[in-house]
Image (tube, rainbow, N blue to C red):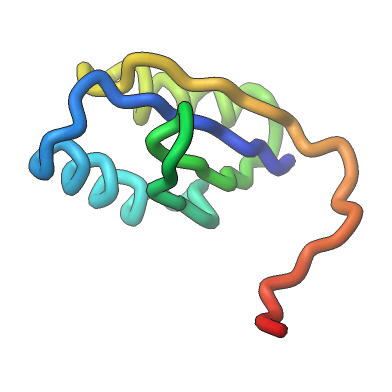
Length: 87
């Protein structure tokens, strides 16, 4: 199951950003992590077996983090095109 997650942080100091980046790099379920502009501070591509595993992921990395203020999840229904090729 692929989940696209938008994460908003409570605080965006260099220390807080670096800590979140470090945690995402070490999270096995996080396939991709982008520090982005816009409403979300980070956009993640998370791969899990099922919704129960995703719930466990959110508990560990979002609910147990005092710096995550909000996150939204979109479950991928169909991979229409997947490519990392650079044109």
